[in-house]
Image (cartoon, rainbow, N blue to C red):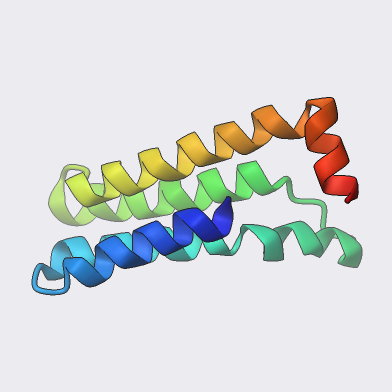
Length: 106
């Protein structure tokens, strides 16, 4: 799921190259979603950070940047964040099912 959302965000960012404000924000949100698996591997090093919490924190940082610099949240940030949150909710919903556990075990 992370790879699909990452690809969608990068594709949108590339399509918006002529609009730097959109391009930068979509690239930033794409970086947030792709770092999720790396955060999950930190547990092997003894750093127990729940991936959803870390991703929401990183998205909050992008939103905070918009609020500080623009005094509002940019539409690209809103759309990118919504896409990530919907994907994250979908993954969390599937992981808890027996089919999701079988997929993880496979």
